[in-house]
Amino acid sequence: MSLELRETQDGSHTLYITELDEHYHSYHGAIQEALHVFINNGLNPLLKSKQLNILEVGWGTGLNSLLTCHYANSTLVRYTGIEPFPIEKECSSKLNYESRLLGVQKGLYDQIIDAPWEVETFISPNFSIHKIKNFIQTWDTKLTFDLVYYDAFGPRAQAEMWERDTLEKVISKMHAGSILVTYCAKGQLKRDLVTLNCRVETLPGPPGKREMIRATKN
Ligand SMILES: C[S@@+](CC[C@H](N)C(=O)[O-])C[C@H]1O[C@@H](n2cnc3c(N)ncnc32)[C@H](O)[C@@H]1O
Image (cartoon, rainbow, N blue to C red; front, side, top):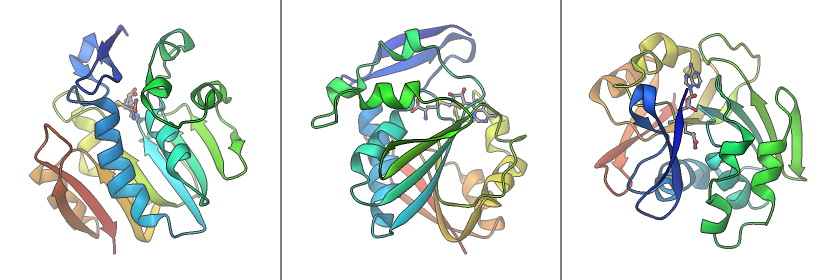
């Protein structure tokens, strides 16, 4: 797998994967997109909770976990990230996320990146990370999640991530009232989520994208 470091329009980095001709984030702005889709429309509405179990499908560079740890305030967050192809430290150490985020604790990104795989690790008293090297399709857990960040490569690059069977697996790990957010706003995805017992909202997308989806399990 060959990865190239690229700068997006908000100055934050992303990775480009040659084999799929796909970026890890929006080239209009990696941090800007992550803040809009996952933090503002996913995490923030749930921050009144004392504790949140969050699942990220496609943990990638760990950007969304860094932002979540930074913005979680006093809510206890237990964060699970599924990623079958972890990137090398040599690659993540070049990403400029910490320097692009005002006020983020110095060294926090390294702590998240250096946390061991396959065990839950507390990074602070109110944030733990559990990185799991697996495919969402084959991973099994008894846990359920309050919030899911669905951050797979797009349907053109990885159609199987958007198939109903894969989505059904993810939705089965949510309880009534749990939320799933994703940057994708395809009509087929909305229809599948409705048939999987979710109420679907089409929200304005981040800059460069008209729409995004938030689904709440009934
Ligand atoms: C759009 S990128 C993720 C971006 C990531 N959230 C970030 O902030 O860097 C999609 C990720 O999904 C991962 N992926 C590919 N197949 C997967 C699968 N079957 N299950 C879970 N993740 C998968 C890829 O390796 C890649 O890291």
